[in-house]
Image (cartoon, rainbow, N blue to C red; front, side):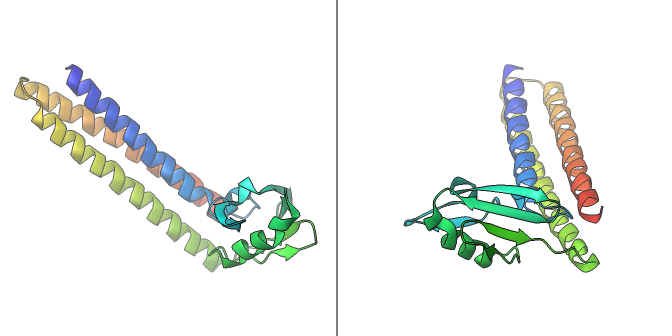
Amino acid sequence: MADMKAINADARERMGKAIEALENNLSVLRTGRANPGILKKVMVDYYGSTMPIDQVASITTPDARTLVITPWDRGALNPIERAIRDSDLGLNPNNKGDTIFISLPMLTEERRRDLVKNAKNYAEDARVAVRNIRKQALDEVKKLEGISSDDIKRGEVEVQKLTDEFIGRVDTTFHKKEQEILG
């Protein structure tokens, strides 16, 4: 049964990473409030290397609809502004000389529906990843040697319980984000 525990532990760890990936993907979706996380995937071309925006500047939210980006080096101001404009976020940065301000417009109902649709796609990707991990774990259980068919059945049931738990976590995470977007 030690092999069965190792298979379950490995599947749990990999399913946890699928949940982490979902949470990272959902964090960049805009809700009604300003959130520095929406800039998480913006990459800045800075002195010949590409790096995440939060490694070249601090990002603050002075109010619910404004992001303020203050670069640690003034030379990074224009590359940061360019990276935000070129991103697929649809944001319009306003360069004030030493900081960049981004005013987030109110979300329209249509834009909210699009964001929910994107969130659903991310959640479905996570469900597929969890199911693929389940399939791999079940294959490993069936390949175990020297165990009875009853032990194989117990192992399959354990893997399914684990899968159900993580699918539930995907659904909970999605519904929480959906409420934030529609909120």
